[in-house]
Length: 63
Image 1: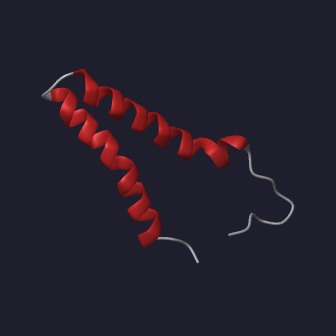
Image 2: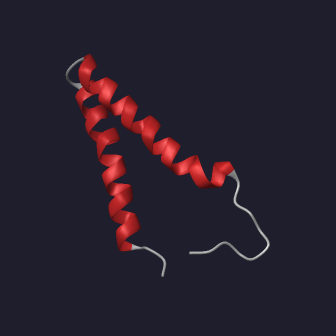
């Protein structure tokens, strides 16, 4: 996919989603080490998010 001619992509546009996913993943990894119960559920949710985003990107990828 190419950007429209004459336009440039900002750093936020390029790295925004990957940085957000990395932050969420780190939160999930740390919460898995903290305790049981709520922290386990938080880690499952946050570690599942990157997999869901990848599945969404593969399923609905633009051509």
